[in-house]
Length: 230
Image 1 (cartoon, rainbow, N blue to C red):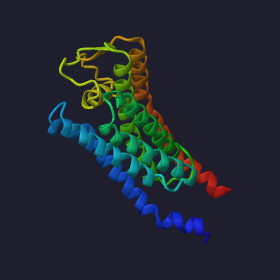
Image 2 (image 1 turned 60 degrees about the vertical axis):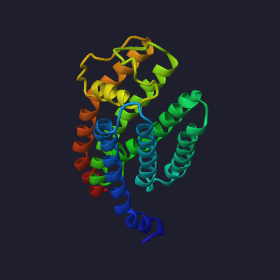
Image 3 (image 1 turned 90 degrees about the vertical axis):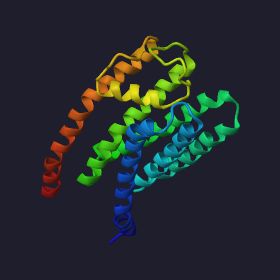
Image 4 (image 1 turned 120 degrees about the vertical axis):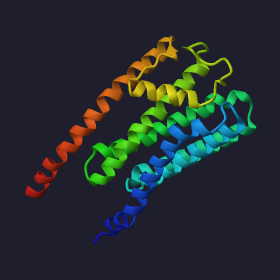
């Protein structure tokens, strides 16, 4: 057995466990942390950075089978984690830098997981876990994008609580997943053009993504059959 093949098999359970851990952390960040943490607090911001650090590290381990992506993703994760934590000792203007760094790292992680879900060679269980994680990541990515828009374009959204800090993440998580699932309660409304475009794009992806994943999973038996015939 080639060494590369042996290495992949030995690390398969570690990768699957990391993907499951990543999904758990995403669920914790989206559904649990906003409920139990006091709004607009230092403790909430510290927990946010801890969760982001765990997301990036678990994500890097989860895609360790793709060596060409694993090394640059790990380097980016380390840099972004450093930027996030260094922001505590930098002026308040570092909020945009922190948000942009997070968005870049999440996009990179999502692209690698997307290749695992829709590409060839991955096992079905890896695809299923990855598909769920990717869907959750989409909501977090758009939350980071909405935060950047609000920082760059004051008044880009209506319905915001006047006491909500511009850099506070939970309100953007809520708005992002409401848009991704096309619930649209209407309590927060994008009025800037870039905010509206982002919202439209996220709503469209939220509708198309389940259908695309389902079509990909349905096509797997046909691919396996062709591989066996070859």
